[in-house]
Every structure is written in C-alpha cells, then in structure tokens.
Length: 337
Image (cartoon, rainbow, N blue to C red; front, side):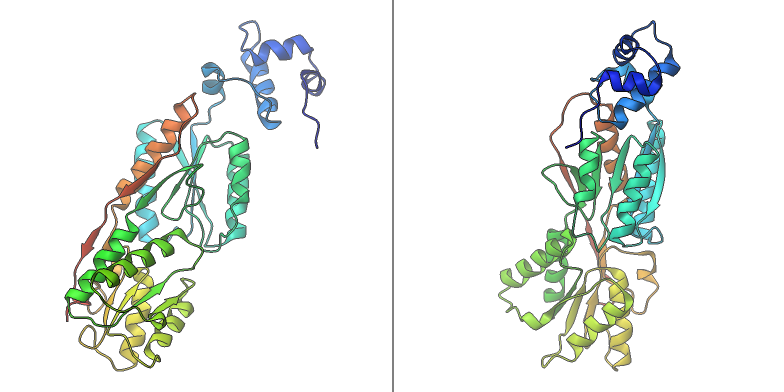
C-alpha cells in the first residue's frame, strides 16, 4: 500500500517549511493566496484532507461541470445538454462536453480527462457498452459530486435523474393492445442497461394485466446499431408466429424496423403496428408518423444540473436521490390499426 504523504513531504516538494504548509492548509491570512493554492492543489492531488473550509473551496473552484453523453448527435441528448447548460449558466457555471460514442473505453478516457481539467462535478449517461463501473471509484475517492441521468448505475451511492421507463413502456404496450394488437413483440436494448430492464418490466406488466400470453420469441435484444436493429426485426418477422405489433426500445430502432417491414411487403399499421421511444425529431416525418414516448428532456437536463450544483455547494454529506420524470405517450399513425 502506498504511504500517505505527510506535511513534511509537501514542504519538501514545494521547497517551503512544514509550518508554512500547515498554515496554508488552515487558510491562515499570513499566507499568500498563490502559495495557498499550490499547497491546496498538492493536497487534493494526494487526497490529503484539507477540511471543509468554504474559503478554500471557493478559491479553488473552477466553476466548470463535466458532461458525458453516449451520442452528442442525438436530439435526445442535445436537448438534455441544453437543459443542463441553461441551469448551469444561471448559477455561474459552464459545462465541458465529452462524447463517449457509446464506447466503454472512451467513456473511461472522458472521465480521466475531465478530472484532469479539475471540473467541480460530473454528469454522466452511461454508454451501451458499460458493464463495469470501477472507473467511477476515483470520483468517489476524490469527493467530486456525480449525477447520472437516463442510463444509470450505483443508485445507492450517486444521485440520478431518469424517465418513468417502466410506466411508459406499460402505457405504450397497453395502447397497442387497445388498438387491436394480439401478438406484441419488443425489441429491447443491451441487457446491461438500466433502461432496457425497466422497459421490459413495463412491457411484461402490460401483457400480464391484459391476460395476453408472453411468447419468449417476441422479446429480442439489440445493440442499438443499425445492423443490430435489422437483425432484430428480421428475427421477429421470420418467427413461426409473426407479431402484429412491435414496441421498439427507441425511435432509431423503430425507423429501421419500419423500413425492413415495408421491404417485406407488409403495411404499417394494418399488418404490423410499430412504436418507438424518445420522440426524436424525425418521428413526425417518417411515413407513417411514429407513435412514441416523449421525454421532458430539457427539464431532465435542468433537474440533473440542479442536483449536481446543490451537491457542489453543500459542505455536508448527502443521501443520493433518484428523481423520476414523467413521460407522455404521443399517438401517431404507425400504431392505430
């Protein structure tokens, strides 16, 4: 185990006396601000406790927040980022964006790089590949506030803001049943993601409450790629009993499903109804217009930033909070038989 640095070690590294180091850590008025900052930064680097002195925190503050999203090009994330930025700006903070590109390795690099930039807090939505959360251990050790949104982990340790995924999936599946669908399939996301589990849960609840039998062939997983979506919908279309409705994990997967269904010569929604999730911008322009779930994305971003900035400003330990935002079913032509 690495030896914990002492005041003597700090004094030697900075070429100053041990009493000077001690007074700097206590924010003594006789020590100049520039030297204090050097001592405080060195202490933070080695995780040396410098107490909860508000003046120290204020003088070392960078007023920056790091934000990591899986795909910055998606309207869903762009709207959430806009909400984060809107609230952060009002509170005197600015954000540094990082795009994990749905890669676990890139996500780890993003965390490292943002910590090097000395952000005061992090807001993160996990990549579709993230099945190990050890890279967030360092954040906890450095006592840097962290809030997750949408795709989350470690909810007993970190706060998060999510949509009511299970209720939303239950609502959209109920809508398909009420529209006359008898054999509803679900194209789910990667099994490791929290949103996948929550949406499957809602889908299954709706089938159960309507006494609709569940066919294991009607639940297929997708890696959220275009090819993954093609494989998923074609697997359903090749099944012995073809579904008459498909609830897709997001709108992009639904667009691909619609194209493949049309290629097979089926009509939407007469032969197969299709629904999405997220209400992306293009949902009103595809033919037929896509039934989907609309998120309060801008508000989700604001709420995430509010949670984080409240933690940054606090000098007391806090219990993690999970805020669940309500969604809305948007009915369009793709699901009404």
